[in-house]
Each structure stands twice: as structure tokens, then as C-alpha cells.
Image 1 (cartoon, rainbow, N blue to C red):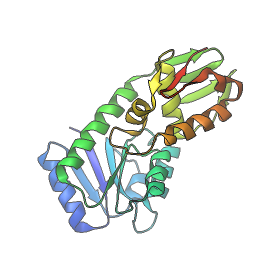
Image 2 (cartoon, rainbow, N blue to C red):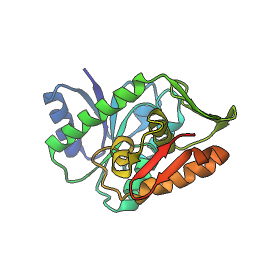
Image 3 (cartoon, rainbow, N blue to C red):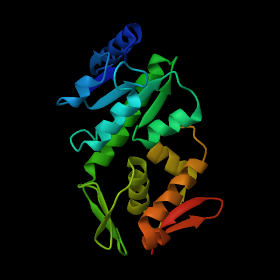
Image 4 (cartoon, rainbow, N blue to C red):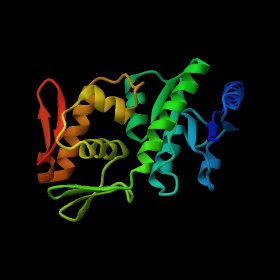
Length: 222
């Protein structure tokens, strides 16, 4: 049974989510602030509101992703903020999905199940992939170019890993959005293009391994 933490300061919303999760086969716990997450967290997934007392959701998310013990816990952001900047900010910090208030309970449950399926698959892959002088060790979550470690954001890493495990295949922008940002992310394809651009810069000469396929998407190969 998956354990889910709901960090939400609105008691009525928190109670509704906890009730719905428990009725749908999850073990759910609710908290009004994110302090609990800094002390030996155990959940399989976190539902995280942005506007919270103390540290806000963005700060909590950043701290979780910087900590080796919590970086792989999937996070769904829950908020009344609706502009694209806020959505992309959360996703780029490492959130796995983003749900706007008000929301439907069944939609929430569906998204939780989708994120758990997606992240469970990625956790199973403790493989190391190399293409020319570019290597990614998914078990250690490390990227190297000519044996020198390259620092990437969470989404840059996920994007590179997906391209590398599908090396030689042309991947459409829509497929990359679906697999890396989540199938419910309605961001424009330029989000992928921006991340590819920064990836190429950070990878240096190895960035040339990422090829643009005009009007389609990208592929990674020598």
C-alpha cells in the first residue's frame, strides 16, 4: 500500500484529500506545514501545496530534491496559482505534476496513480548508459562528460536520461513532454526546446550528440 503525505494548510481541503485517498486504497497522512518532510520522511508520494505557513511549497520542493534521501520521492504540486510561470517553476524544480484548485477528486486520484506508475518505472532503472564520451549513471544519478561530472537540474537530467535510453530514436516534443513532464502537463513545446538548449550548453562538446529533427523533435546519437 502506497503511503501519501498531503501538505496543505486548508483543513477542509486536506481532510477531503485524506478521505479520498484512504477510500481509494492509499494510506494517507495530512500536515498543515512541510516541516515533517525534513525529518525522516517515509511517503511514496507527496501532495504539496505552494502557499504554506513557514517554508512555501517551492522552498520545500527545492530542499527535498537537494537531499539524496528524499530526491526520488515524487511530488505533485497543489495550488490556486494558475499562470504558466508558476507551473513551469514547480516542474523545473522537480515536481512530477501540477494540479490547480479547484480540482476533481477522481482527477486527483488518476494523476496520483499515473505519477506512481511513471516514477516506479524510473526507480527500477539502475543502469549506466554511455554514448561517446557522455555517460549517465541512473543508479547514482550522475552525468559525466569525459569522466567529469556535469550538474543538471532535475528535469534536465530526466530529459537527458530519456533521450539516452532511447538513443538513435527520434522522439517527438509531445512524447518528451508526456514522459518527462507528465501526460497532464499542458505546457507548450518551447519548454522542451529551452531545456534542450540549456542541456547542450552544459554538456559542452557532448551537446552535439543531441540532434534536432526539424518539425518533429530530437534524437541522441553519435
